Amino acid sequence: MALVSINELPENILLELFTHVPARELLLRCRPVCSLWRDLIDVATLWKRKSLHEGFITKDWDQPVADWKIFYFLNSLRRNLLRNPCAEEDMGSWRIDSNEGDQWKVERLPGDHGTNFPDPKVKKYFVTSYGMCLKSQLVDLKAEGYWEELLDKFRPDIVVKDWFAARADCGCTYHIRVQLASADYIVLASFEPPPVTIHQWNDATWTEVSHTFSDYPPGVRHVLFQHGGKDTQFWAGWYGPRVTNSSITISHKTTREPASSTARPETMPEQEEAARLPSPHHL
Image (cartoon, rainbow, N blue to C red):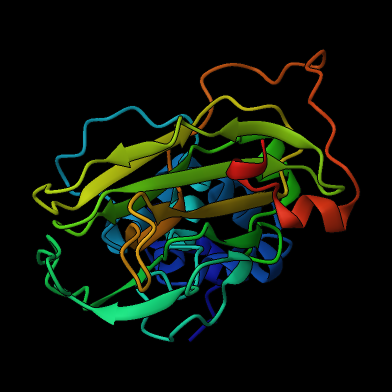
């Protein structure tokens, strides 16, 4: 019996085989094999099939997708880029920028004069004191698997979320600052809403803060996340805002507008200064 080349199989069968091959292997090892494989691996149908196979979409998906290959990779990379968001590792992975009063502390939910978190899987929170307490993380997007063309050409939405609450018996002020920065720490986009003050004798409800960076300038390589606050009664102990379940995720949604070549970002000082993130109470 004569041997049959795999390339003699119907293209639909080859596409089905490629659907089960890891994406990076497809691009690095399979795509260079021959022009037929290259063309099949570049076709949108394959990446739509892989998205369906991985559960990124359902069979009745009807939303427009500009580039199915990029859609697939963004979904496969999607996760919370902040480490230790719910205090399960005490203060691990967080840089302490300000540690005044009785300093940062980790407590278990619901805490004194507190309420349970909406998600029962979250068991702990970070809590601040009577002096300003701020902590931060610096996320290196390339180190997390996002390559330059993906970040500069497609500029996927960057979604930032945080949760905070006050004790019912004490007022507090909550701060958050998030910055998108270049490889050399130039700030390209920033989210810094006014501080939120909660008065004494509140309902201790957990509040979510959410912001989406869209159509930002090309060149983003880092995300700097900082949050914290202090109580307003100046009581010894840990009566300031409580924070937990923070997240930075890269969405599958990409830019709607072409990159601007005339954008002029504000400059940030040297790398070390940038990583520190100036404290809101020093502004």
